[in-house]
Length: 324
Image 1: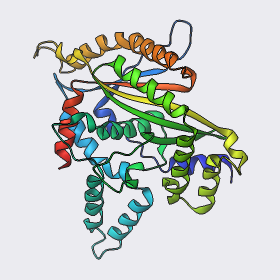
Image 2: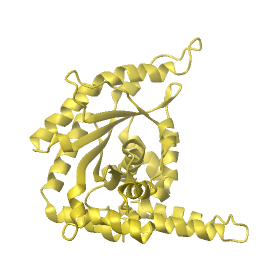
Image 3: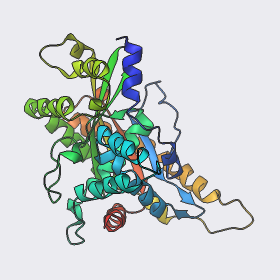
Image 4: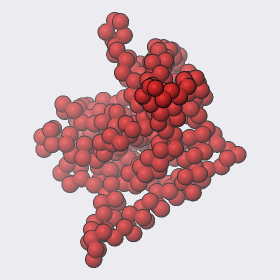
Protein backbone atom coordinates (compact mmCIF):
# COMPACT_ATOMS: atom_id res chain seq x y z
CA UNK A 1 0.00 0.00 0.00
CA UNK A 2 1.57 3.35 -1.02
CA UNK A 3 2.11 6.10 1.53
CA UNK A 4 -0.22 8.54 -0.24
CA UNK A 5 -3.10 6.11 0.14
CA UNK A 6 -2.16 5.60 3.80
CA UNK A 7 -2.35 9.33 4.38
CA UNK A 8 -5.72 9.60 2.64
CA UNK A 9 -7.18 6.73 4.63
CA UNK A 10 -6.12 8.30 7.94
CA UNK A 11 -7.43 11.70 6.87
CA UNK A 12 -10.81 10.10 6.13
CA UNK A 13 -11.26 9.74 9.89
CA UNK A 14 -11.22 13.52 10.36
CA UNK A 15 -13.98 16.05 9.98
CA UNK A 16 -12.67 19.25 8.41
CA UNK A 17 -14.67 21.26 10.90
CA UNK A 18 -14.71 24.72 9.34
CA UNK A 19 -17.75 25.60 11.43
CA UNK A 20 -15.39 25.93 14.41
CA UNK A 21 -14.06 29.11 12.80
CA UNK A 22 -17.37 30.82 13.55
CA UNK A 23 -16.69 30.54 17.26
CA UNK A 24 -12.90 30.43 17.66
CA UNK A 25 -10.81 32.97 15.80
CA UNK A 26 -7.12 32.46 14.99
CA UNK A 27 -4.71 35.35 15.45
CA UNK A 28 -2.28 35.78 12.56
CA UNK A 29 1.11 36.66 14.04
CA UNK A 30 4.34 36.99 12.02
CA UNK A 31 7.42 34.91 12.77
CA UNK A 32 9.97 35.99 15.35
CA UNK A 33 12.64 38.45 14.28
CA UNK A 34 15.19 35.64 13.91
CA UNK A 35 12.90 33.73 11.55
CA UNK A 36 12.17 30.92 14.01
CA UNK A 37 8.63 29.61 14.07
CA UNK A 38 6.86 30.25 17.33
CA UNK A 39 5.61 27.25 19.25
CA UNK A 40 2.35 28.95 20.19
CA UNK A 41 -0.83 29.88 18.38
CA UNK A 42 -3.46 32.24 19.72
CA UNK A 43 -7.17 31.44 19.48
CA UNK A 44 -10.00 33.40 21.00
CA UNK A 45 -13.73 33.19 21.51
CA UNK A 46 -15.22 35.37 18.79
CA UNK A 47 -17.84 38.10 19.07
CA UNK A 48 -21.37 38.75 17.90
CA UNK A 49 -20.99 42.51 17.79
CA UNK A 50 -19.86 43.33 21.35
CA UNK A 51 -20.87 40.01 22.96
CA UNK A 52 -18.63 36.91 23.10
CA UNK A 53 -20.19 33.87 21.40
CA UNK A 54 -19.89 31.54 24.39
CA UNK A 55 -23.47 30.25 24.21
CA UNK A 56 -23.17 29.41 20.50
CA UNK A 57 -19.77 27.83 21.13
CA UNK A 58 -21.26 25.59 23.84
CA UNK A 59 -23.95 24.48 21.39
CA UNK A 60 -21.25 23.64 18.84
CA UNK A 61 -19.37 21.59 21.44
CA UNK A 62 -22.54 19.75 22.39
CA UNK A 63 -23.16 18.95 18.72
CA UNK A 64 -19.60 17.56 18.52
CA UNK A 65 -19.78 15.03 21.34
CA UNK A 66 -20.77 12.04 19.19
CA UNK A 67 -17.74 12.45 16.92
CA UNK A 68 -15.52 12.92 19.95
CA UNK A 69 -16.84 10.18 22.22
CA UNK A 70 -18.12 7.44 19.91
CA UNK A 71 -15.72 5.43 17.68
CA UNK A 72 -16.26 5.87 13.95
CA UNK A 73 -17.12 2.21 13.36
CA UNK A 74 -20.07 2.51 15.72
CA UNK A 75 -21.17 5.78 14.12
CA UNK A 76 -21.10 4.19 10.68
CA UNK A 77 -23.23 1.32 11.93
CA UNK A 78 -25.83 3.74 13.31
CA UNK A 79 -25.92 5.66 10.03
CA UNK A 80 -26.34 2.40 8.11
CA UNK A 81 -29.32 1.45 10.30
CA UNK A 82 -30.82 4.88 9.73
CA UNK A 83 -30.43 4.66 5.96
CA UNK A 84 -31.75 1.08 5.79
CA UNK A 85 -35.01 1.95 7.48
CA UNK A 86 -38.29 2.10 5.57
CA UNK A 87 -38.05 5.88 5.25
CA UNK A 88 -34.25 5.84 4.92
CA UNK A 89 -34.30 8.59 7.53
CA UNK A 90 -34.90 6.92 10.89
CA UNK A 91 -33.21 9.20 13.41
CA UNK A 92 -33.51 6.87 16.40
CA UNK A 93 -30.07 5.23 15.92
CA UNK A 94 -28.50 8.70 15.93
CA UNK A 95 -30.51 9.83 18.94
CA UNK A 96 -29.25 6.78 20.82
CA UNK A 97 -25.66 7.75 20.00
CA UNK A 98 -26.25 11.26 21.34
CA UNK A 99 -27.69 9.81 24.55
CA UNK A 100 -24.79 7.38 24.87
CA UNK A 101 -22.24 10.13 24.33
CA UNK A 102 -23.86 12.37 26.97
CA UNK A 103 -23.74 9.56 29.52
CA UNK A 104 -19.99 9.16 29.07
CA UNK A 105 -19.24 12.63 30.44
CA UNK A 106 -18.84 13.38 34.10
CA UNK A 107 -21.88 14.80 35.83
CA UNK A 108 -21.40 18.52 36.40
CA UNK A 109 -21.16 19.38 40.09
CA UNK A 110 -21.35 23.15 40.78
CA UNK A 111 -19.67 22.52 44.13
CA UNK A 112 -16.68 20.81 42.49
CA UNK A 113 -16.15 22.61 39.18
CA UNK A 114 -12.40 21.89 39.10
CA UNK A 115 -13.15 18.22 38.51
CA UNK A 116 -15.14 18.98 35.36
CA UNK A 117 -12.30 19.24 32.86
CA UNK A 118 -13.80 17.15 30.09
CA UNK A 119 -15.09 20.23 28.30
CA UNK A 120 -11.43 21.19 27.83
CA UNK A 121 -10.68 17.78 26.33
CA UNK A 122 -13.59 18.19 23.91
CA UNK A 123 -12.28 21.63 22.89
CA UNK A 124 -8.82 20.11 22.35
CA UNK A 125 -10.37 17.50 20.04
CA UNK A 126 -12.06 20.20 17.94
CA UNK A 127 -8.89 22.29 17.76
CA UNK A 128 -6.68 19.35 16.80
CA UNK A 129 -8.96 18.28 13.96
CA UNK A 130 -9.29 21.81 12.59
CA UNK A 131 -5.94 23.47 13.27
CA UNK A 132 -3.57 20.49 13.24
CA UNK A 133 -5.44 18.72 10.46
CA UNK A 134 -5.05 15.56 12.51
CA UNK A 135 -7.65 12.83 13.00
CA UNK A 136 -8.59 11.49 16.41
CA UNK A 137 -7.35 7.93 16.42
CA UNK A 138 -8.54 6.88 19.87
CA UNK A 139 -11.96 7.83 21.24
CA UNK A 140 -10.78 7.42 24.82
CA UNK A 141 -14.00 8.58 26.42
CA UNK A 142 -15.71 5.46 25.03
CA UNK A 143 -13.44 3.33 27.28
CA UNK A 144 -15.22 4.52 30.42
CA UNK A 145 -16.99 2.00 32.61
CA UNK A 146 -18.08 4.64 35.12
CA UNK A 147 -19.11 8.11 33.98
CA UNK A 148 -18.29 9.56 37.39
CA UNK A 149 -14.62 8.76 36.91
CA UNK A 150 -12.39 10.76 34.53
CA UNK A 151 -10.32 9.07 31.84
CA UNK A 152 -6.72 8.88 33.02
CA UNK A 153 -3.62 9.40 30.94
CA UNK A 154 -3.19 11.67 27.95
CA UNK A 155 -6.21 13.82 27.04
CA UNK A 156 -6.30 13.05 23.34
CA UNK A 157 -4.43 11.15 20.63
CA UNK A 158 -4.52 12.51 17.08
CA UNK A 159 -2.43 11.70 14.04
CA UNK A 160 -1.60 12.96 10.56
CA UNK A 161 0.31 11.08 7.87
CA UNK A 162 2.62 13.18 5.70
CA UNK A 163 5.51 12.33 3.37
CA UNK A 164 5.81 8.80 4.73
CA UNK A 165 5.92 10.00 8.35
CA UNK A 166 3.28 9.31 10.99
CA UNK A 167 2.86 12.48 13.05
CA UNK A 168 1.27 11.67 16.40
CA UNK A 169 -0.06 14.49 18.55
CA UNK A 170 -0.43 13.83 22.27
CA UNK A 171 -2.94 16.35 23.59
CA UNK A 172 -3.00 17.90 27.04
CA UNK A 173 -5.97 20.17 27.71
CA UNK A 174 -5.81 22.78 30.46
CA UNK A 175 -8.48 25.04 31.89
CA UNK A 176 -6.57 27.70 33.76
CA UNK A 177 -7.07 31.11 35.39
CA UNK A 178 -4.20 32.56 33.33
CA UNK A 179 -2.08 31.79 30.28
CA UNK A 180 0.99 31.43 32.49
CA UNK A 181 -0.74 28.95 34.80
CA UNK A 182 -1.92 26.92 31.82
CA UNK A 183 1.56 26.84 30.28
CA UNK A 184 3.03 25.66 33.57
CA UNK A 185 0.42 22.90 33.97
CA UNK A 186 0.99 21.74 30.39
CA UNK A 187 4.76 21.58 30.88
CA UNK A 188 4.39 19.57 34.10
CA UNK A 189 1.91 17.13 32.54
CA UNK A 190 4.14 16.63 29.50
CA UNK A 191 7.22 16.01 31.62
CA UNK A 192 5.27 13.49 33.71
CA UNK A 193 4.09 11.65 30.61
CA UNK A 194 7.56 11.60 29.06
CA UNK A 195 9.07 10.12 32.22
CA UNK A 196 6.60 7.24 32.32
CA UNK A 197 7.30 4.71 29.57
CA UNK A 198 4.67 2.36 30.96
CA UNK A 199 2.00 5.02 30.40
CA UNK A 200 3.32 5.70 26.89
CA UNK A 201 3.10 2.01 25.98
CA UNK A 202 -0.38 1.87 27.50
CA UNK A 203 -1.51 4.71 25.26
CA UNK A 204 -0.09 2.88 22.23
CA UNK A 205 -2.07 -0.19 23.26
CA UNK A 206 -5.24 1.92 23.31
CA UNK A 207 -4.45 3.07 19.77
CA UNK A 208 -3.92 -0.46 18.47
CA UNK A 209 -6.80 -2.13 20.32
CA UNK A 210 -9.50 0.58 20.57
CA UNK A 211 -8.76 2.81 17.62
CA UNK A 212 -10.88 4.74 15.13
CA UNK A 213 -8.52 3.16 12.60
CA UNK A 214 -10.62 0.04 13.17
CA UNK A 215 -13.24 1.60 10.87
CA UNK A 216 -10.88 1.33 7.87
CA UNK A 217 -10.47 -1.65 5.51
CA UNK A 218 -8.09 -4.26 6.90
CA UNK A 219 -5.20 -3.54 4.52
CA UNK A 220 -5.26 0.19 5.35
CA UNK A 221 -5.66 -0.53 9.04
CA UNK A 222 -2.65 -2.88 9.07
CA UNK A 223 -0.37 -0.31 7.44
CA UNK A 224 -1.33 2.52 9.77
CA UNK A 225 -1.18 0.44 12.94
CA UNK A 226 2.30 -0.74 12.02
CA UNK A 227 3.53 2.74 13.00
CA UNK A 228 2.47 2.05 16.58
CA UNK A 229 4.06 -1.40 16.88
CA UNK A 230 7.09 -0.90 19.12
CA UNK A 231 8.44 -4.41 18.67
CA UNK A 232 7.70 -6.04 15.32
CA UNK A 233 7.62 -3.23 12.78
CA UNK A 234 10.23 -0.92 11.26
CA UNK A 235 7.48 1.59 10.46
CA UNK A 236 7.69 2.87 14.03
CA UNK A 237 11.02 4.45 13.09
CA UNK A 238 9.05 6.79 10.82
CA UNK A 239 6.85 8.10 13.63
CA UNK A 240 7.14 11.61 15.03
CA UNK A 241 5.68 12.37 18.49
CA UNK A 242 4.60 15.92 19.33
CA UNK A 243 3.08 17.18 22.56
CA UNK A 244 0.30 19.73 22.19
CA UNK A 245 -1.18 21.90 24.89
CA UNK A 246 -4.68 23.29 24.37
CA UNK A 247 -4.91 25.93 27.07
CA UNK A 248 -8.20 27.74 27.75
CA UNK A 249 -7.75 30.61 30.14
CA UNK A 250 -9.54 33.67 31.51
CA UNK A 251 -8.64 36.70 29.38
CA UNK A 252 -9.30 40.06 31.01
CA UNK A 253 -9.45 41.87 27.66
CA UNK A 254 -13.06 40.71 27.33
CA UNK A 255 -13.90 43.12 30.12
CA UNK A 256 -12.18 46.04 28.36
CA UNK A 257 -14.38 46.51 25.32
CA UNK A 258 -15.44 49.68 23.54
CA UNK A 259 -18.91 51.32 23.46
CA UNK A 260 -21.48 50.28 20.88
CA UNK A 261 -21.44 52.77 18.02
CA UNK A 262 -24.12 52.57 15.34
CA UNK A 263 -22.04 54.77 13.03
CA UNK A 264 -19.44 52.00 12.73
CA UNK A 265 -19.64 48.34 11.63
CA UNK A 266 -20.35 45.68 14.30
CA UNK A 267 -16.91 44.15 13.66
CA UNK A 268 -15.14 47.00 15.48
CA UNK A 269 -15.51 45.13 18.79
CA UNK A 270 -13.74 41.99 17.62
CA UNK A 271 -11.13 44.04 15.77
CA UNK A 272 -10.43 46.03 18.94
CA UNK A 273 -9.97 42.79 20.86
CA UNK A 274 -7.69 41.25 18.22
CA UNK A 275 -5.43 44.29 18.10
CA UNK A 276 -4.79 44.11 21.85
CA UNK A 277 -4.75 40.31 22.13
CA UNK A 278 -2.11 39.92 19.40
CA UNK A 279 0.29 41.92 21.53
CA UNK A 280 0.23 39.14 24.15
CA UNK A 281 1.66 36.55 21.79
CA UNK A 282 5.26 37.05 22.86
CA UNK A 283 4.28 36.90 26.53
CA UNK A 284 2.47 33.59 26.04
CA UNK A 285 5.26 32.18 23.90
CA UNK A 286 7.88 33.19 26.46
CA UNK A 287 5.82 31.65 29.28
CA UNK A 288 5.59 28.36 27.37
CA UNK A 289 9.33 28.29 26.65
CA UNK A 290 10.18 29.08 30.27
CA UNK A 291 8.01 26.34 31.75
CA UNK A 292 9.09 23.73 29.20
CA UNK A 293 12.72 24.52 30.00
CA UNK A 294 12.05 24.28 33.74
CA UNK A 295 10.63 20.79 33.21
CA UNK A 296 13.42 19.82 30.77
CA UNK A 297 10.89 19.25 27.98
CA UNK A 298 12.14 19.89 24.44
CA UNK A 299 10.39 22.94 23.04
CA UNK A 300 11.04 21.70 19.50
CA UNK A 301 8.77 18.74 20.20
CA UNK A 302 6.03 20.76 21.88
CA UNK A 303 3.50 23.38 20.85
CA UNK A 304 0.50 25.06 22.41
CA UNK A 305 -2.78 26.68 21.47
CA UNK A 306 -3.80 29.41 23.90
CA UNK A 307 -7.56 29.99 23.79
CA UNK A 308 -8.78 33.23 25.33
CA UNK A 309 -12.27 33.06 26.83
CA UNK A 310 -14.15 35.41 29.17
CA UNK A 311 -14.49 32.75 31.90
CA UNK A 312 -13.23 29.18 32.08
CA UNK A 313 -15.62 28.45 34.94
CA UNK A 314 -18.43 29.91 32.87
CA UNK A 315 -17.64 27.46 30.06
CA UNK A 316 -17.60 24.58 32.52
CA UNK A 317 -20.96 25.57 33.96
CA UNK A 318 -22.70 26.19 30.65
CA UNK A 319 -21.46 22.96 29.09
CA UNK A 320 -22.26 20.93 32.19
CA UNK A 321 -25.80 22.28 32.31
CA UNK A 322 -26.27 21.78 28.54
CA UNK A 323 -25.34 18.10 28.92
CA UNK A 324 -28.22 17.42 31.30
